[in-house]
Structure formats: structure tokens, C-alpha cells
Length: 329
Image (cartoon, rainbow, N blue to C red):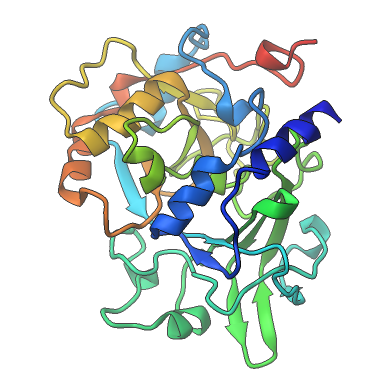
């Protein structure tokens, strides 16, 4: 009850939301700054700068690539919906047994992953120059994540391989998260991310980058992962059991002695967050690849300097569990 009252107090300061608000707007910035995204003691909001290094950290780093550069996709967009957004059915085609039930508040302007900018390792999934949102809602390949934030009800809805059809919306998987709770998905359940984790809380957004620091854990991918997971993940996506490979939910931290002084402000904001909150192993994909919300206000040239960071500049930390760290009672 105390946690829900805290969330309600934060939501009381929200600007009025009268219609769906897209991710790359000043209106979205104001709403997000007023929100508490998961409780303050949630793993995404946990300061891990003083946690001990996990035994075997060097081997895990080497398995991903100590000499490989940190990269990023401009991929995970989102839409913020008003309290009265109409709910519609979404047909789940691949993981109905590991999906949450609808209907869902999907607006007509729901964005699909990678729209509208052009930086992603999956070139086939990128929007074509001049391609409309309506077109990309229906056509294209790739993971096609769709992320819907519902502040008034404290809910987050995320879909994998979402697509609009003549008969309505469909997706391969659908997940709903309570933004006022630390509750996880059921054990062994996936989400729109392979690890069973939410995506939205892990995405570096313009509103926080512009304020000088990303104050939450981020997400990244690796090509080879282990058939194991660690809190707060709930799912693996591998047949490999080599202990040198990262588990889903493994948490990585940029070394404290890494010098940030030569990086432009937008890159520094991300790197400061990586030193304090780190990043979670969230899905299979290209090595050391992070997610940044696509936004035309970002200093994209400055963000390219993130490639100066290499795998050896990280360490794997021994994370706290559901009843440890800030959640200890």
C-alpha cells in the first residue's frame, strides 16, 4: 500500500494527457520527468557502483569480446497513452502461454521499433527513407517491438513482432508490467525481451540524456549467452552451458576508473549511468549493443564516440537478490 501511495503521489504531478504522446517530443519529456518508473528500490533504479565484482567476470567479458566496441541502436521508441485510451484486442501468435491477456490501449499512432531513424544492425528491419508510420505498422521484418506507457494506470505494455493487419493488431508476444511494483514475470516466462525483463525502463531517453545522466540500468545484447538467468531475469534463450558465457539478467558496470572527460555531453550522460547503474544482459543480438530511444534532438555524432569504450572497460557485478540491497527488510 505504501508503495502504491508513493506512486500515486508522483502521478498526481503529471501533466494532463489528453491524447497519445510520441516519444520524441517535449510533451513526452515533461510526462517522463514527472513519473516514477518502478519503485525506487527496484533493480532498475539500484545504485550498483559499490557492489563487488562477480568471480569469473574477466572470463565473461572475454566471451563477449574484451576488444570489441560498445555500440548502440536507435531502436526502442514508445508512445504514452491517456487514461481513457480505447483498449483493443491483440492476437498473440507465438507465445500465448507466456503472454498477458488483453485488451490493450494501443493507439492509432503506435510506433514500431526503429522508426523513424536509421541506426540498427538489422538493416532489413530499418524503415525506408520517407516511409510513413502507417506503412511500417503493417510492413517490415525484425523484432518490431511496440512499447506503450500508461502513466495514469501505472502500466507498461510491450509487444514483440507487433503488426497492424486488416483485422486488427497482432504480436508474437505480449507483456504487461506494473510500474508501481517490483513483481517479476512468472519463472521461465519470457517477455518482449528474451530475459523476461521490461524494455522501456532500460532505454536511454533524450529527456534524461539532456539532463546529464541516465539514472537507471540500461540494456544490451550479446551474440552468445548461457542457458541460465539471474534476478531479475526470468528466462533464458540459449542451449549453451559454458560458465564463461553471460546469463540473462547478468549486470555489467563501467569501471569506476574509466575516464569520461573526453566524451561529449550526451555520451557522458550514458557513461555516467553505466558507472552507477550498469546495464543488464537482456537479449541475444550483436555484442555490446545498447538501446537508445530514437530522437532527432540527440547529438548523434557525439554518441558515436561511445565506440571508444571496449568490453574490457566493463566488469560483471555480483547483483543483489529480491530480498537484498535496497529491498532488504
